[in-house]
Image: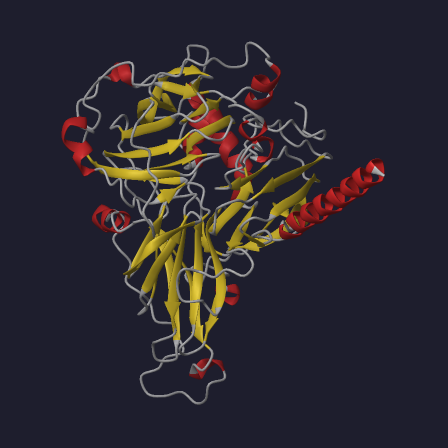
Length: 579
């Protein structure tokens, strides 16, 4: 009898457990996708190129998920180049194997091979994106990743009638991989792009382009959510819409206290969510983007890309006969000057987290990292055509005087996980080896040639981290968008000149600083970020100007496992590519 009772109890418990588990799993939705990397004929600026794309689409597919969902994306490489895909801004909690940067968390997917990325998006809502993280393939291999609130939840602002991703990009009238290879061969700066684009289209002001200009329809009284992504390789961009106010409500998949502006600015890698309402006379209005250029005397593309905000009742578009004062040609907005750092500063200083932030106050790891370019002397065995940087040098870049070198036989994460020696060291310096007037005009030429190495900085699980990111005037000061993989961080302060802990600490916002994954370090200035090292793995931090990555403007953190399964990296998947 007792045995029978025990058996009934056990069966009942098993049924309850199974039901509970099934209910929990039912709330976790998995989205399955297949990305085929392939060469596709793409015509822009009158010329057709065999561009590398995903599923023949440029830009690639838009992925839409809810906060809490899982993505399973099988990437099949049918192109002639190695490739990886990075899910920009996704925290990848314990799933570093799915992060994507080549030779950091994985070896590349070779031509003819495949790899399946599996990860869950937790606690993030807003706009993220995905892109190739191998050579310069991300010039054409990129797309948006929209994270909606969980099912049954809503936005903390007016529910928009529609979501509209706007991917700001760059287009080369050449093979971008060849552009990078030529730059590496010559040691000079890579050629600038030939056009900027919105959703892959240059717009009305470029040759052979006006027929395909991106059009965003809107009704009178309608509010739409523009999800603006700077997917350009090398250029921060201003963006505006003629005669319309933009209400900023989020950035990098974190909500903000709403504020209204005429123009937004995004460094490469950054996203900004803005509400726009159809409150103007029905017409056609240009949405426009062009360069913010902070590096003095450096060549850049000074053209303007456009899309069209088109009222459905506008006279040009089925809304009746033309009326006095309404033109068919879209209205053009005013854009800031290319070097308008004041507008950039006003915009970035408007960012506040929607709610009180849980900012670390007791700091375990305090790092001071200088970022900037450099010039290597021409090696004696190189001919002059291989040293086409300024005065016969070769461009380089560094953090704390270390120019980051990626391995080629193993990824950093594989080497760490398997204990493979000789791939990297953990002696990245917590401060620059030489203290100098970082933003001064008379920087010693001895500081122009950094050391080259694969140096990581080790962090204990759960440690609190503060990093001062300090721009330098080596070669030229510049606004650098610094992206940290695997983490969001609070930007507690930014300013100009050299960071002074005695006076600048008083400026820290520890109440409601913005939470981001990419910080634009001001030209000739600094930014301070804070985060908790709660995600074990190897995470690269790099400038998102791709020309600077190839020169070594990066470093990586090795975050150790904590205690127990939930503080430990998952095991590598069986189909992880080998080098």
